[in-house]
Image 1: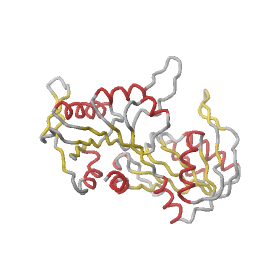
Image 2: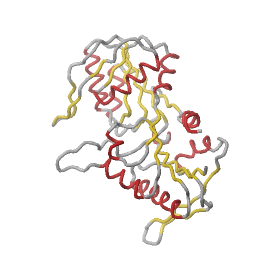
Image 3: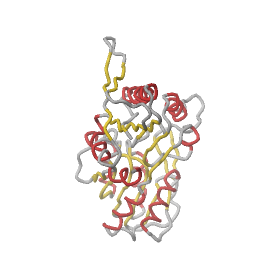
Image 4: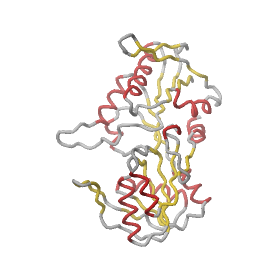
Length: 293
């Protein structure tokens, strides 16, 4: 297996290449005088299985370079190309809405047309993503990793809360892995003209709460959730998310709403994550090494 790693993910690639049977693939992303992109390979891939480790998230040059590399590998004789995308971008756009794009289907078509054979990622946003992306997807769960932290921090007696219906399955998976006894409590979310509104909570809560979701972006859903929990008497909240996008600064309001700590993985390069003493970054390289190799 040949592993082609984009520079921003070398912190993961260097670990994965220690696995038996893996070697480094070398490539160069070049530009013509008018800035059009082209790829040069410095590794023979004929008849080989190849994996590309990188991102298709903005800026858009990431998407173009990733897809162009995949297509180049196949055109140069690679037997199989797997996209290793720790954060699979554009999968939130998976609902059919009048006069709006369906980006998940669009990105699925691009990945397929670029001759990618399979995708490996973490915590797929929803089951609908599999319907719109016409490729085999191996979505690794962080439930076991989160459960270990919950046990180490003696949080197994806390209530577990899903901030919206889409997070219920993730919460249930963490509950089972951590052998927690309480039923998962949850909110229903709807978008309004002024932001996000949540229903009354369904289920029982305690003064200490764990929230599990796939990501934190601007933090608006988690802010709405924590604000309601605070009014219900919750004193301490621990948040577990797979992907830490941390767009803007609104998410920092969470510290005033009872949030004690946020755990997220390094599926987004650590150089892009905020430096905050209350945010703990979980390395995903050991999980990938264990699950894939």
